[in-house]
Image (tube, rainbow, N blue to C red; front, top):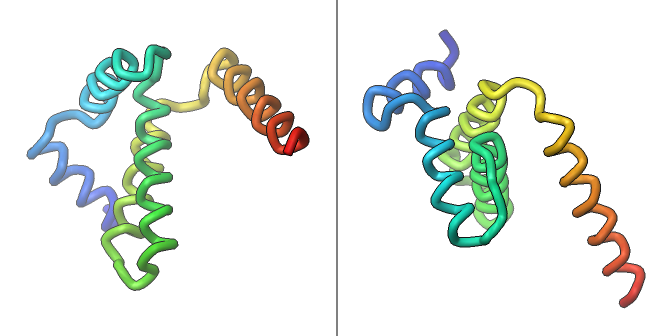
Length: 102
């Protein structure tokens, strides 16, 4: 078992199944932002949070380990659905349009 798998197993004992946890977080975040968020997206966003922390403090090893863990959790969901891919592409096109307007 890899270090990440050991950590995920230990965290699972502490917090429960990561998919169940991330799906619950997704429901809470969906209420706050008014857009449906999936557990897969929660895992990706948490990984990005940890990656941002790496930019702030590249010597903090916990952020590297944690970002890998969140990527592993995203992998538990398998391939993103066509709907999620379409939403990301639509968002990306809006972001590109916004950059061109500046």
